[in-house]
Image 1 (cartoon, rainbow, N blue to C red):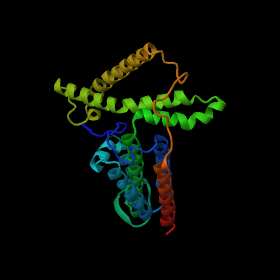
Image 2: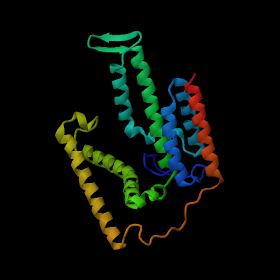
Image 3: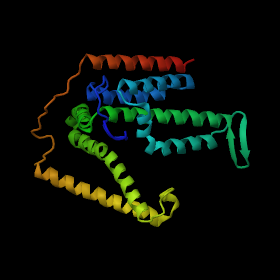
Length: 266
């Protein structure tokens, strides 16, 4: 379990969440996303936040590591909250700088949207932390298999999504390594590459894209060497099967959705 938790990286542990069928966890994540949007007030959203926070100890994942896993995406939360803070107007004014104003409604909207986006990212992070990327790929392929009757390439789509999840934490590590190497060579990147000009930003982006193409070339050669032909003739060591714990998880999500709707109506 060494290393830091990153979005897309599997956190190895033995927990009830890890033992769930990956299809249950994938559908459960989608259900959590719907439940988060069902919460229409702070009471309901706080209840959902408490439920999601309890899932991380259940999966034996420290909450600090869970928050660290979504840290690279925190700029999405910050930008969206700022837009709501300054552009949503209503209620008592809290600050007025001429053309820029902050009202009570804007503050409430920024807090609510910020918390909602944080819960959405934590829900996605919970899936990747408790499920290996290969299991997510297989679960997605099995769930999309019925669409194959209409020509939808379920295996190829799931395979691409699995590769994206698999390489996301690796590219994050490589970006950090490239940045450290450039700083060691005297590049002015100690604060932020975006503040240091296009040349400093290019010194990070160009090596990163070169690494991406190198990994893609290596992966393509490895697939050719292993005579990869998609799902044709593929067998599975451990076929997916739903169990009693999956039914209990579905009932718990249904109860959470019902409680969220009831609290939203208060």
